[in-house]
Image 1 (cartoon, one colour):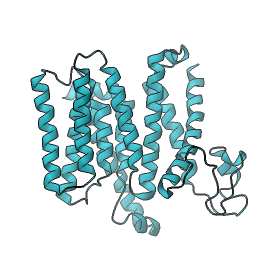
Image 2: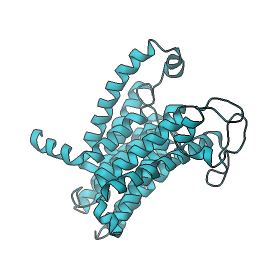
Image 3: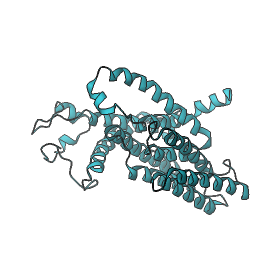
Image 4: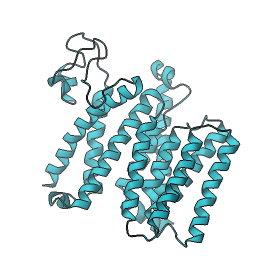
Length: 325
């Protein structure tokens, strides 16, 4: 039964991966009809037939070329579909209980759907970042709103629920104001300091800590990771990290909370260091890579690796932290 569940998620992932490629293209090109528009060849603009829409297999059987205009179909499409499939299967294997899913246990079903949506949104922003060296605002806004709602549901029995929600929205609002870059950096720093002071005073006045609330735990580390990334941007004048990565910082902090946020950031930097060394070697022999990423490398994929790495292996990481910390 468990194997069937994982296979089903894998197949489900291929379909969402195929849809993700459409979302990425139409977000960038501002093409209408993300939900209702027909998929078509970018070169000859011909609508694709149902057979041509079969994930992965259609790319292989067509020898990675359009059947009509013979233009080359990028390998990014099957890679995206396979990555989404593996991530969906990983969510099923590591993060939910298949026995409860088979019983249609409502909380576990809600958890599964939330995690799959976050996984899909992560795939979209990762591949968007790889292709265009930026992260779509709308994708991270949706992910952060869903996460705030999920944390509020987990905090539903808290007597301070309404105040926790108000504080969370206020802090996230200040962080998004900073990311909009309306003001000079000195004022952005002041806004960040205001958010930190506000959270500190709130915890002192209401005698609440991160142990008492999922929202408070998430907000504290959303501030922590955001501040860490923001400091690198200010010090390096945007050379070490991009403003787009701040959106991911909020999502990581909200989801991982106090317990695992530090581990998530460290895993991201560890993955980035290893892959970056390989890319430097690759860069020396590949002209295409030099032209594409000579001055900037997407950090979103590394953050996603750390994020889901911690989610998938939280139990093992927690054990290691208790032993060595």
